[in-house]
Image (cartoon, rainbow, N blue to C red; front, side):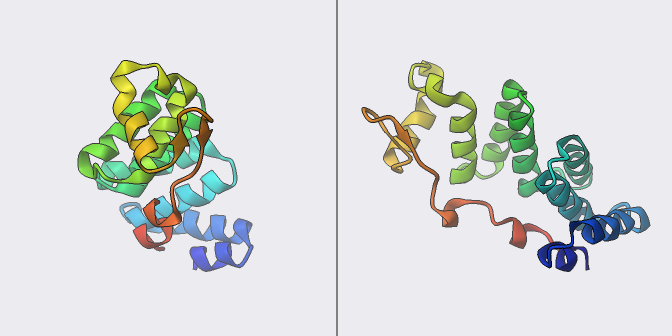
Length: 154
């Protein structure tokens, strides 16, 4: 019900529904994950991070929560923690383009001169995300991204 409300443009109702779901079923990872996604979309990043951490306490390998927590860490200026978070995802699924792109976003232009991060720059060049010379940076195709809608549902 929470997802339906959110998709119908009723974030307040969705927030109420998902919060209630996590209260009634505190071990329901999908409800915590979806609440985290809603809170993240609303810009309530610290609350969203708490939801993702709860998901990870229940299901440590949940890729969507790991990746979204990395994005929140990056958005809040915690770049070292964000890179560590993204690397946790890569240890589980090394070919997720979205996560490699996340690391590139965190590293920014400095990645081009940091020898220990050259693997990410090489991957980005190979996949056409950046061009050395014009130094343009693009987003991976949507098929390479984690599809949050299929990761969990509540």
